Length: 306
Ligand code: NAP
Ligand code: GLV
Image (cartoon, rainbow, N blue to C red; front, side, top):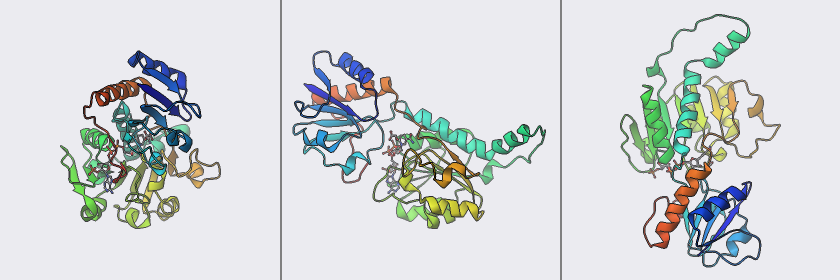
């Protein structure tokens, strides 16, 4: 069996070493144009030429959870697309989102500003009940995040495509449940995959439905959010601010208004990083299972787009 590694912006050697250790009897190679086609591939943002040179590929293992960029490419005819299924991401996402929610709820930015001025000041404690958090997307990451927020006694709501039950979370689903989900949410977290059905989901219309003083946390993809609508609603006072980890163009262009906006916190797409060892272990396990003809989790439904 031959495994090809083709990951843009990724240091190849440690990945190749990990995959070779998992498959000592097989050929594991970094792709170069014109190389012999492979049976399996480990990819991130592969060039179209790589995919076009893989007529016999059985599966493409994406070293991330989101497959939106890959699904824009022309895929090999029979290859399954397999996404990372947690692999150490969900705990990172829970840390990031809980941190952002608590920082906003407890007004830690304001305390920090006071402390910088040498001010010993108190703010009136806020009520958790006034800060219901709504998580869009209750998949591998969203469910973990929703449960982590519930541990801090925030009222938590969740929205997914199909109806779901998550302990401690008030669940809504589909178009029918979206307006009710939004109208009872004050802090909105986006953990949706980017598909034709979710692009621009956070626009003026939807964000206007949040409770007054709403707050937006986008940790999914930049194209879920209409940037100008967010800024307009913050500047009008309807929204209190936002924490954004993902952007339409990454790196975020130097001239983008998000950088300097006083009510927007920006991080460089780092909320849940791919952890190499966990990911190699997961991919190797799935590849071995597939070669034995066994089913594996995390196969992308190409029609649904996630
Ligand atoms: P997942 O397991 O596929 O879960 C997706 C969830 O979104 C599911 O609950 C799904 O509903 C729901 N959904 C999909 N389309 C919907 C629609 N049209 N309306 C309502 N709900 C919809 O994905 P995941 O592993 O949790 O990851 C989510 C996304 O996070 C990834 O696609 C990626 O873009 C992003 N991500 C970002 C980072 C980062 O560092 N910023 C890291 C990893 C991932 P059903 O349950 O009904 O299917
Ligand atoms: C990162 O954004 C991922 O999709 O894993």
